[in-house]
Length: 109
Image (cartoon, rainbow, N blue to C red; front, top):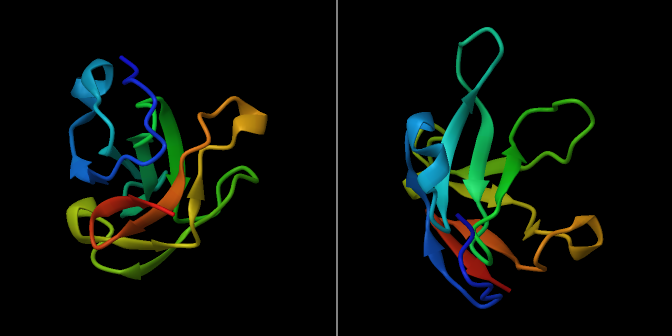
């Protein structure tokens, strides 16, 4: 369920299981594993600005943008830092939230 749009919203990254897919709140992250099951390849997350589900890939995947883990353990989004910034691009149907995931918190620019 999408949240009211708030482009200034800060939200803690919170790991949730895939069975909670229909209940994601802004900042919730579902771990996406490598195809061989050996580790984390990214997150399906609820946008901090609107709650819509989006992807944050930390490994190349089908030509989509890729973020680097600049700090923390990817298996624990509650403490991870990604680079570069994250944009839920309005040109692609997103709400326009733009910010960073730093030390486990989605922070707007």
